[in-house]
Image 1 (cartoon, rainbow, N blue to C red):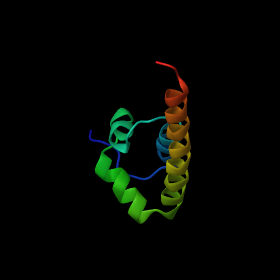
Image 2 (spheres, helix red, strand yellow; image 1 turned 90 degrees about the horizontal axis):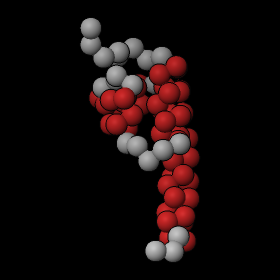
Image 3 (cartoon, one colour; image 1 turned 120 degrees about the vertical axis):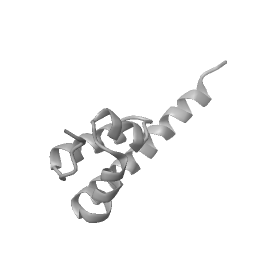
Length: 77
């Protein structure tokens, strides 16, 4: 049996949660979830729900990364 290709909100939320709270790439996240990267990209194009959820997750990820950068910059070496 191959990777899932049918959109489910459960998988979409798992992708978005992992994206928002980490520095992981979509490639890594989809691999960890047993989903192909191409499928996730297709979902972004074909599914407005996922596209909106993922855009919000990427914005949250940018905040997460900015906080990491500030913490690293403020840590004495």
